[in-house]
Image (cartoon, rainbow, N blue to C red; front, side):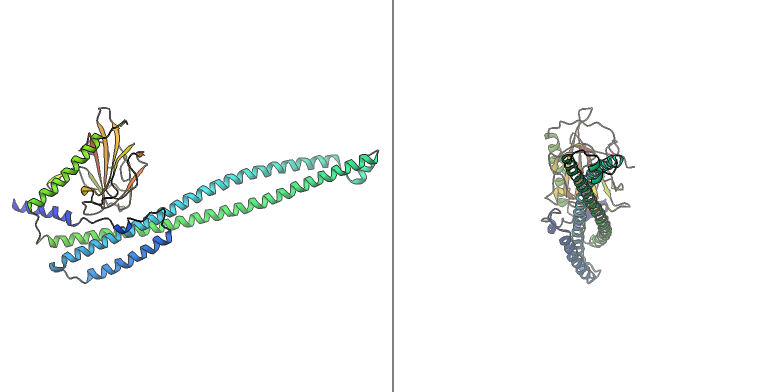
Length: 413
């Protein structure tokens, strides 16, 4: 019995020592203000720092006296790696914004070009019609007009008219030629713009490859930390008081969330049915709803599968309104950066809400309306009480957490 308690205490401590804080170095960065070159330079600096940390880790032997320092260095590497990933994602966001803007400009130019082409076609048809008329009536040379005119005054009038008609036709043809040259230049510019867009898309793809590689490296660091902790477990035990303190903290947060949900007015209607999966690109569940580590795990943990989850988009599971969004306190009572969405009242009069925890970024604010499966609430991360990156997802009925899968709110496949 004592052995079981000891194992449980050790497991809880493992969760505590593995918790890492979100990098303060990113707090002042805003993707809208940072240039791609600045972000690239920052990534290079972090990569250099990462190598220095690796070198220091290698200096430590495997004896227990150095394991704590090794663990701290590994956690610093994790923090550094997280910063690099976030910067790479910001670069990709900046490039995507530029691509979107350029595509809008290209579409506007193509529409404008189509209008100009219609004008040219109309002018060209007008010119063709006039030339046909002149051709059918014969060549109105000066001699022909003199023969066909009884009085010299009429001849002068006709002569002036022909000069004017000729000048107008020449001006029309000159204008058409100039317009066609400009259209050709604009078409070439559009093709150049499209080529630039394709080049930027390649850069975005390269950034994604870099980001995925660093996510894999970060997961490897987490594995190393876990290995170090196993060594430390030989000499560490948690006291009963520490365990109770941790349990009280979790219960306090749960009560606060419950109170927040029930005290917030809900005007929407929840239509029922299956909700959208909160992380569209990742469906692997590392921990389900129910008892865990001597307490209740109030949701499901969506973690690394074929796709690394860190930085993946977390979407609203259903239509609703954001009623809470923590994007400043990295601990967040253990939930880290987290979001709560109110989905309204169901057919039974029950208030339905969802919670998304441990994010690396929060992208919505309180009062914002969201669309199920479309609105990106946040990006998955590892803030709060975690042992690795994942998305903790909860469904709450009248503030009380329920099993999202067992109750049919979401499906694994």
